[in-house]
Structure formats: structure tokens, C-alpha cells
Length: 202
Image (cartoon, rainbow, N blue to C red; front, side, top):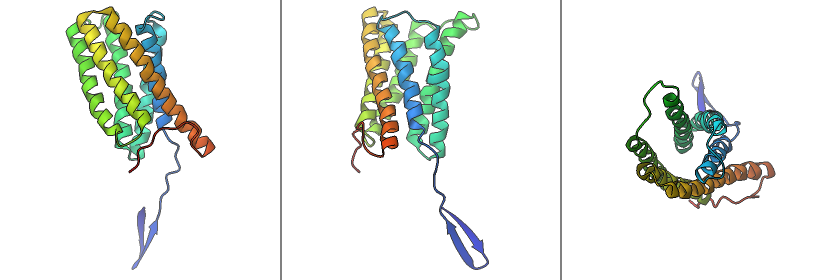
């Protein structure tokens, strides 16, 4: 709401937000990319350029766009989450490609484990925030916390079995994000709850 003054008379103008909901874009960018990466971790197929391309464009750039739009809507949680995880995907691709291209030395296993642990701690705090939002997001963030710590353990120990377990957890995490994003789209289109999100009561 803004105020205009005309002499001694004040006129209040209500500004309505007519923009669309950016959350489905961010959730789908995160979810689909996470599923595809973790299918590789689970051993369904080999890691390749498809995953890196998804990481740059849909997991990375699309989430950053969603995050900036959430910022415009004054949604601090959404802006922080989408922008951060978009940059996570870009940084992960950079870690892989910069070393492959010979620009910088590859990060050792201790460094990569620390990388995943820091993201796990960040996600754990964000999970606490979802307790005030909805159950669908709680599933996304809880499974993502587990995923980051499993990836840290797999990286540090070199245990391929942990990587496979992380892969299946990541598939669940990604699919839950895809569900949450598509549920928001369908619920808005139909004007009613088509796919429930488990919205928490104030």
C-alpha cells in the first residue's frame, strides 16, 4: 500500500501482487535435476553430460530465477532456498568441470566431504523453517538433509554402498520436490486442492 498526498488530503492506493507463483519452477528445477543425478548415484546409469546440463540450466539458472521472484514477493524463505540451491548446482558443476578442464586442482575427498556437510547443516536449519509451512516441504528438506550427510560419508569413506543408499534417498527427495511443485500448479489451475500439501495451521 502506498500513500499519495494532495494538499491536506491523503489518498491510499493498494498495490496488488498480480505475478504468478515462482515456487513450482524452483521446486521442479531442484526436483527433476536431483532425481536425474541420484539415478546415477544409485547405479541406474552412468554420470554424464545430461546431468551437468540439467545442473546448469534447470537446477541452477531456473532456481535462481525463482529465488529472485520470491524475493520480489517478500518471501525470505523461498528466496534463500531457491537462490542457494540454484547456486549449489552451479558450484557442483564448476567443481567437476574446472578440475576436468585443468583450470584448478581437483578438490580432495576431505574438501568435498566438508562441502556436503556445510550444505547439510544449512539444509537442516531450513528444514526447521518448513515446520511452519507444509508437510510436503518437510519431506523435501528432511530427505535432503539425509542426502547431504550420506554424500559426505560416501565421499570421505569411498564406500560405494553408501553412495547407492544416498542415490535412492535423493530420488525420494527429488520426487517429493516434483510432487510439491506440480501440486501447487494443479491446485492453482483448478482452484481447489487436487494434490494435498499438508499445509500447517497457524
